[in-house]
Amino acid sequence: MTGPSLLWIDWKLSPKAMVRETAWRFCLLFLTGLFLASLLLSGGMNRFLSEQWAVTAILRLQVPPAEGEGIAKKAAGLAGARTAVYKDPEASWKEFLSAYPGLSALRTTGGNPLPGYVEVRMRPGRFTEADIGAVEAALRPLPQVERVLSGGEVLPRLMRVRDGVNAILWAGFALLCTVVFSIFLLLEKSRAFFLAADFDFLRERGVPVRSIVISRASGALLAGLFLSLAVTGASALLLFLLEDRLPLLGRVIGPLEELLTPSLLVPAALFLVAVALLSGAASPLGWRAAQSRPK
Image (cartoon, rainbow, N blue to C red; front, top):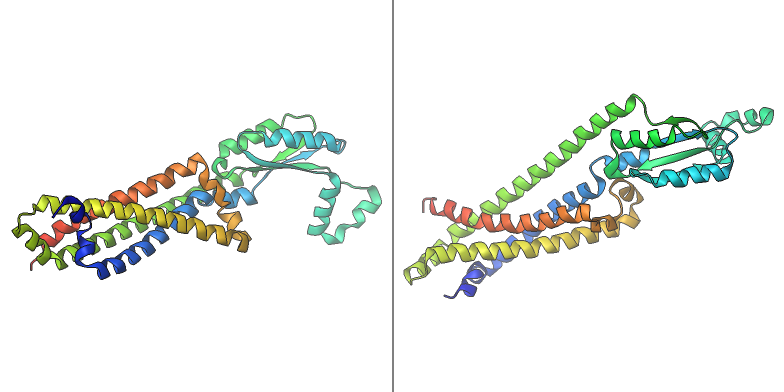
């Protein structure tokens, strides 16, 4: 048999079993790819926390709206900032009444007692004590700023919890990858044992064992690459469909277009390569395990 024919020898010898196995592989890789895409987009807890947590610069009562808007614009240009929004005193009063509806009489006795403020939200990837401190340090010296609120003593504890949860999530992903590779290995071992008679037939007719092993591994590598591409596309499509239907998903995971940024494209590309390499590696390992199994 020639090299190209050996490349897909398993498909020729057992096509129905390979179709079923490929479907199972797709499901396993789809779950893994979806988990990875969610981790990359969300940064674990980073995006959720960056949506809930803000650095707030309370302005002095005499600061006009134009200056407040200018401060917000400059704050938005800081390295770790994602958005910076100015809320004028009227907006502050409405938010206050929404939280404490029974205190509307405060305004009738002395006008609006609340100042405006600038609310800065951090980028998920820059939600760190250092970056939050940098934003705080840039806002505090401004003469228009009365005080800056950024979490104080609570922030370090929150960061430790965040780091612990993120470590657990990535450990879960690593465990999932280990389980998937173990299943791939078992599938390769079972198939190599099941087709042992056919491989013996090829060896008896002069086909080197090395050629069979290398060709099967190459075929598994290519199949893994094709599957990983299909899984990546399916995962992206599912997240795209759910993004509009589940707004909470967008706030926790983030917009799908961020996968096209270089910081996320590199891990996604590594996933494609890793799936192909591990699929290719599972083939000779499964062959070796099947050869040592008593017949």
